[in-house]
Image 1: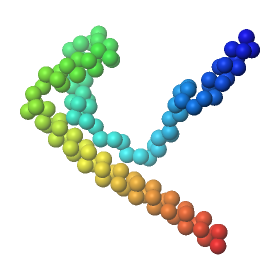
Image 2: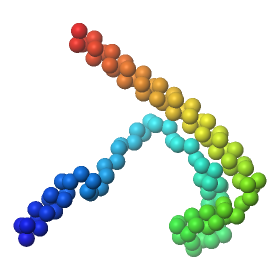
Image 3: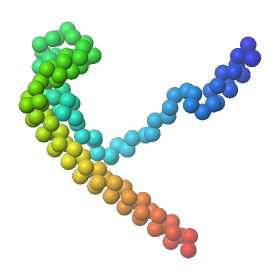
Image 4: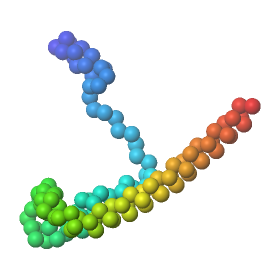
Length: 117
């Protein structure tokens, strides 16, 4: 059995094995823009659940996907317009966020440089 323990240890220490470590998300970062389908889902999920009360969460998603695929391009247009608005909002928010983040780190760098001199 000691031989097996060595194998497990050596495999676990190799790069690429095991679970990947996720970066911690900044709680102050702006939320990403919703896609047209996600906006559609947000609006129609309560209706689908009301029509099908016994359906599981996964099945609600499948029903939403089927309903989205049945829509014509003309019917999808309001959601696509909202998606463009969401993207514009996100770009403005992320630019502000990055500017404030860069400003905060740049301010911190200046203080460190002053201490070094």
